[in-house]
Length: 288
Image (cartoon, rainbow, N blue to C red; front, side, top):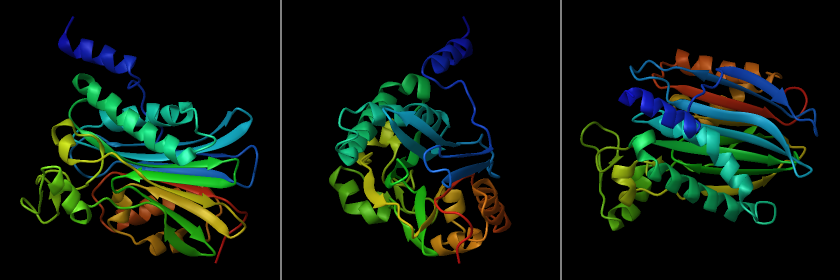
């Protein structure tokens, strides 16, 4: 059997055989005014699309979970693809997910990273950033992230960032304590060991001693003042501030149209990277 065929069968076995649609939308069954929409756009770089996302509602144990995530791969797309197939499954399977959600998410992130590192022969030596948002019964929003994909919430028309951009300069001391270094050579962007422009990521076996996969986690109440949530890869945030993104889609009632508008604006501002974007609307109508 040819080597490529063997590798293809191995990828199918670990759940890497499907490609996500580039746009879609849906709504909650519990709170029907909560809707979501998403859009993916291939960037102008020569490599294949490296962004993946999850945007769906799931009924489990008498609860409704909104599962939303952006995965931005680098040095290949297989790690990001693996994450979209496995990360939420690992989170929900944690025994204390319902009683101690934050710790369950932290353990699931670490477990998933270990799985990826153990599958390097299939997934390659690349990696992926991630930002995940779990909406529990339409009332509690739990956001976690590693890397520079971002979650931004709009409350009373104002943008608030819920994730942390894990930039190498911000974590330089921790990287150096692990034996690594941060350098702008080559180029003008700080990179771990001169290679990777984020300080935390899944995978990246060759850099793992100097990288962390520990997520930042925030827990937020969804109340009457909560307008909408934006999740997006850095292809959007490189050319747009949080408030600019929020202001752009305030009048747009349809979540999928809002996600499309954000990607179109990023392209008009000359972003070259892949763009993946999810918008979750929590209230009826527009907000000003």
